[in-house]
View (cartoon, rainbow, N blue to C red):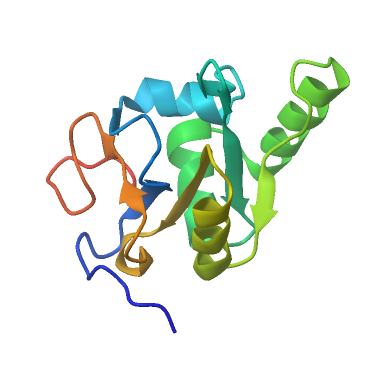
Length: 142
């Protein structure tokens, strides 16, 4: 069992990265560009690896509704088309639990995941969105 950082922002979805990630704060527009595959690198030598929860998870539903503004079918078609047109080498990697997401973020430089804010393990960095952390008034992912 991992130690979790606490129950800050109960019900919010946290954007987590490795502590050595070169970013601390993103706008909702920048997060959308990451998730749409329009921004594929954090910097010149660090590729973004998207980790998205499997269908029917609350985290995925919030990300699809709030950031992608797509249905599940639209999301799948978007990534199939993007890979087919060679605009991306692959779609987001699917993770099946918050624990799996956290383990992969810790292991893969440049990875980013969306996890329940009550389940962010110690050792990962939670990104601010438009200057707000989970639990802050006006935080967009809940």
